[in-house]
Length: 281
Image (tube, rainbow, N blue to C red; front, side, top):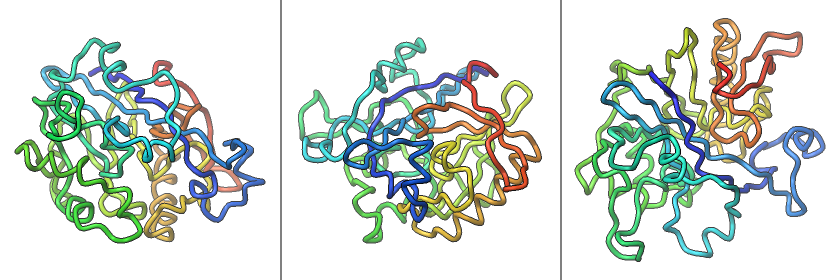
């Protein structure tokens, strides 16, 4: 098995929204904000190459929304979904499975595009891939609550089903992939899926939005976007204890600086032990 980082670029979000009740005077030490209180965040996806399977985990924000939409998020950086895929030696047709941790626009927007680059007909970016979600989250995303409605964009989501390429993982059953197990988390959004990948004798966990960055490791650092923040606290506490006990490698989707880290038990709780690049494993 080989893992490839797919860098789909950077975007900006309000620092206060990203750190919830934690004061700016504290969170800005690890995530400095610009003059508009915005911090840069990565959209770092992961490609699993294993035999005849090529599994992409999340796919970034995409490029099909209008100028007004993108004016809120300030896309920047040198990354790009297709550019990074090509740099790894692949093209969209090669992807066999498109695994989506959840269906917020910055995680799934890159999986659907306008045909021939013009508005109108929509098509899958990965025409030979099975697109994976789970039934509970799909229902949550396609019948959204008012709090999350702006994050679940129908043109990102519905074409997966309309194309006939959508399949569901089942939380009551084993992972449909021999390449990884799945942790289900419900604090950020309903039934978010985190892959747990055996890799080089370690367990690597794709953190999605349970732990957006190394700066979110302390328990109170919970995003204002989370629908059930107290549940996120419980899920983080249980996960971080196990991650420290079993020396998990945490792979960050949104940390603009740190790709991976390990954590350890300290007198102040679980804290960052070591940050490093995936290539250094």
